[in-house]
Image (cartoon, rainbow over all chains, first blue to last red; front, top):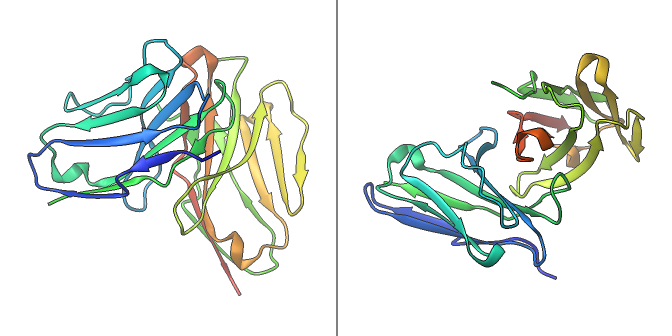
Length: 113
Length: 115
């Protein structure tokens, strides 16, 4: 089947606006991760969902960031009142079980102007 | 606290040279998992290997090999006879069941292989 799908692939938004980034994981994968990658930088962990357990939100940088995963499948990362420092590539990954190989999407490149 | 350290920010080699990418990790768990991923210029991360903490056997896959040493908390990656197509950013990652199982990445090493 299809791999991890993220939409949109690119998003340009004005400072102060809210944005929603979507991730469609591979069907049947119980684990889902969100990461942020600034230009030329490493992967910054944001949030992790595992099945129906409460998500690990320890990586969310501020209360402007939130994420949900509906029905154990699709996930949405929401950034409220965007700031220029939020500009980055947001990567989503899923894996079939905890601690196994993660499959990454192509990412959403967010630019806040 | 930094869980995964990749001290080499950038490495440049000439084609056919061997190159080793270092990864040092930190954990209090006895059970944990280590990974290497490759991010080519296209941007999509590609899984290379997964190793659990109970398996210290070194692994070889073609020109790639991995050296896992618990005594030094290291999981180094060697590319033998490097090729231009190996140019990418390589990330080491750690997953700890005792820490919610989330996967934490190192800062990455940018490898450039020149013809």
